[in-house]
Image 1 (spheres, rainbow, N blue to C red):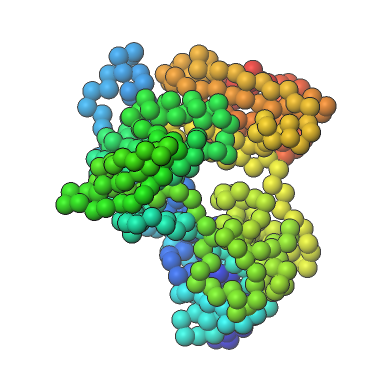
Image 2 (image 1 turned 90 degrees about the vertical axis):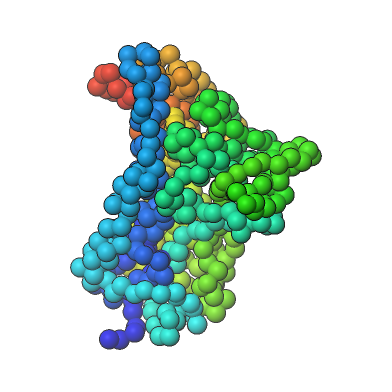
Amino acid sequence: MSDAYDLIVIGAGMAGTSAANKCAAQGWRVAIVDELPYGGTCALRGCDPKKILRRGAEIIDAARLLDGDGTHDGETSIDWSDLVRRKRRFTERIPAALEEELIGNNVATLHGQAQFVGRQEVRIDDRVYTSKKFLVATGARPRTLEFPGAEHVIDSTSFLDLDRLPKRIVFVGGGFISFEFAHIAARAGAECIILDHGPRPLRGFDEELVRRLVRRSEQAGISVLRNTSVDRVEPRQAGFVVLVATDGTTSTIDADLVVHGAGRVAALDDLDLEAAEVAYGSRGVTVADHLQSPTNPAVFAAGDAADTAGRPLTPVAVFEGKVAASNMLRGTTTAPDYTGVPTTVFSIPELNRVGLLEDEARAQGFDVHVRFTDTSDWYSSYRVGETESAAKIVIDTATDMVLGAHLLGHGYSELINTFGMAMKLGLTTRQLKSVTATYPSLGSDLGSML
């Protein structure tokens, strides 16, 4: 077998596999390599398994919200081991199925650590492969923690694979991972504390909605400590002691488990990009708008491994992979369009954002109209017993188009997609309100939010 290819993709996650399949379909000789099982973070160690575990938490929460108001919570509980086994039944079949699909599409599937040894050469184990083009799609890894005892902190991958859920859990960081996992663990009976080093968590989301989510989190038994940094983690005979500083005051927290939720960085450490003369930073491979390295035109990057304007989201990785593939195939310089891409914190209830925050819109010079609505007493919230839900819609008064939508509520991760579609297609609020939705549904709430 020849070791020369038209394209070698490094990373078999969503960005990498979408690009590999696209180029192979056009007759290119394509190989893909990963040192981990095929599937990437989202399918195996992130989005999908997380939401399978979350389903158990949703059921518990739903029962509690209506307990004594038409139903009885009784002995409803989560069996963590059984729930994790259910998650594994989904994830364990993915690598083989994905590799079989790639092979069926004439993509050579390689396994091992890829390391550049030249501008157009990589070594995989002890074998050197050459290629006309490369796509770096290695995703992200947890950010390195600098405090003493960081080696005792587990990452999100390990949390999702716990056979037993400890009673006392501390989450380091006030972002997506900490909130999503804490909302799962709390419903499974754990005592959860989130440590955020800033004045408020989830800083990329609307401040008022975050405040409401924090209130709802505390009602679910999750403590959120702001302006708190970790000084060290010390092991004890039973668990750990976490030494923290809050507004200059030191204290200790006893924990059975400490979880890393303090952000992620591009996973590039083992690639030896210097050997390929590829520029990069903590946000990923440095690329032009069309995802090509300016220092080595043979190399493209996509997904969490690329320093782009896109958010670190699976759908973004998929379309960046496809755009990179198209540019390689056609020799074009098309840039990805990030308009209308929503993002969600899958807490209970869900926190969503698409487009600009209110202050961002004003800073960019838009004359905005902001429609804020507390939807806690709306039918869709009352029906399920949810006590915290709200919507903030940011509208450009000059064009009547949505600049941003921010939603907190049960099932609102589906409703945010409609706002994203409206932004992508340039629909006005008048056009959105003219649509008749099936009733009663979450979709029928949209018109009233505008």
